Image 1 (spheres, each protein chain N blue to C red):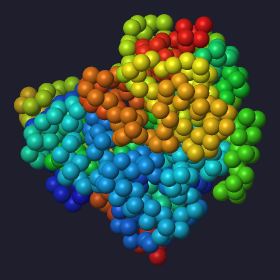
Image 2: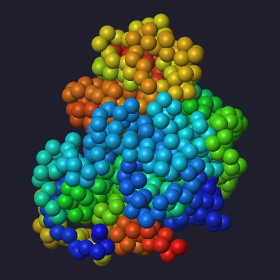
Image 3: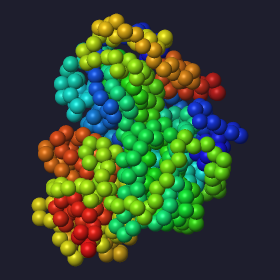
Image 4: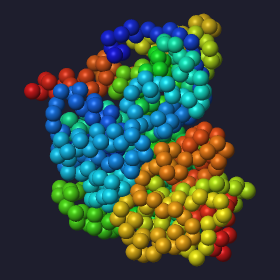
Length: 172
Length: 424
């Protein structure tokens, strides 16, 4: 869970374009399973067939506008998280994907400037706490939009389930 | 306040809300299907509760990979079925009584004007046609909703679409929403509410309104919403006869002074049939600009266009004619009730005689699940809602989105064509 783990990630960036939809992130033909590792093995398959094998763990996924548009399938952030991607940086996120990522504890950051300044293969470091994104290859730094406090609390609790569980046990 | 803001405020127990505000709100109805419910159920059990908050306000519909396409999908459907039994859910619909969720819930009277609805499916925005606030969420949101009856929301800004005039022959709500998405883009309403209003609304049938609200998500919207009028009320009166919802509903409408981020105007008379080219719903063209696009498959159905009026148009065009040789034409009535009505009215007979294959309700081909997958290099014209890369099958297949009228005409011609050219 992101709240408990190191909040600084550093790794190679895999760069994609605008409007990466959930059918590209995880095609519906694989939605007959809940197994995160199986989902991860098909992550981004229709955009880059070798993606799952290339991700070794800790890399970052960088994309343009409206990342995660389309379906509400939570399998999409689950597949990305299980693939080993540490954080997604996008110019903007589609709203259901954004919610789902927060709810399941997949770190995401929004910054148009960072996305414009990162090329595929660059080494990038992000600090979730400060919102600082540094392109180690170019030496340039960027500030991501901070998460609203309400959502930070969900992330810090370790996701929505943990946050609601805490709330429910208080009520008893 | 706008109608969206009013519904969110009331369900959050607040006098007033403003765009950008984060609220916890009570949900009147919740929905999941055989793909999204299994994750929601897993997460539900992690919450440390053993009962849902209200067994009458959760609808589970096995519609995506059903009738089950393989063992894995059968296991998922079984997991959902067992949960529904264990929790004594009143609104679980087995194959044989089920339909595509977004056609089924309104038909069963499970969504009413003024409701706040969440569904673990992005096309949950369909119910905005009934004057409800209705939006897609993920499985974890739904799990927490099933336990607490609540969900968190960011109050969206609203875009106002003023609709004037009347649709011409062979032009439908699908053409209007495809045109709008073409104009504002697939993120043109990202995080926002799309409010449809104006004197032209009265000229749009309920089936057309459902189609329009259904595709609000394809512009990135949180919800799409229509005003409640006599047509809505007569629909609701009929749907409530089953008695699945007994609580009174409330009609909300936007204040004359409400704030909108943008206002757009559309004149229905000026609209011609639209086609969205691969691989985004925003790649919309007028039918007159389409050119020569041969097709291998035609799909008529889905939560977008599988309603009675859609089948009626398809039957009118295909009736007495034949599907073009070599073109697979697949028709999916959205619910059992629609299927039965279409049967009684002779639409199914006309479609089968023309050479179309008619299926039991399922989401099947729309999301490339089953019942009509495309091979490499194949092309379909479809009345569904998405034409992303690989959406209906192979990553090198293509989907063109259009209305039932265009799809039916194209089935006869073997290429994408205006219904006028087939019908004269």
